[in-house]
Length: 131
Image (tube, rainbow, N blue to C red; front, side):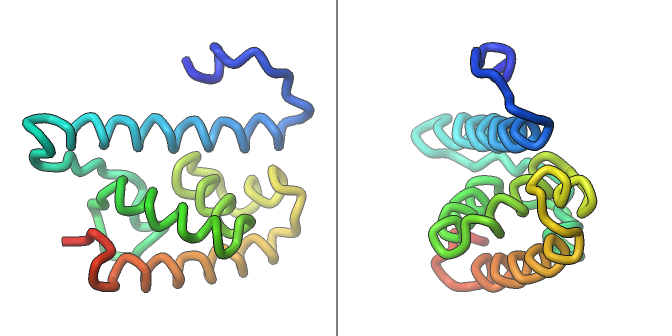
């Protein structure tokens, strides 16, 4: 609905996919925030996403923690953050992500591996909000 309400013109498929991934991220984060507001910050709702892509073996992730880590990644490397957003929130493959960002598939795979490692470390560090 957010994309339908958006009156902007998309210059190409890559622009649309990028906008769609950002909208999906916002919807998932808003939903998680809504759940955490209940009863003055009660239990966070855990939303299961395709976490295997982000972290092998982890079936359930806290979307708000991922969102906060992704904001920190954006400050460090905006392209890696966009790759994570397209892969994790939009569910695009390496090939589709490469096409959307007009990069080589090899570059996307390399950046995806680096971003995943960075996020793993970030999510495992104390004070990251992880249980």
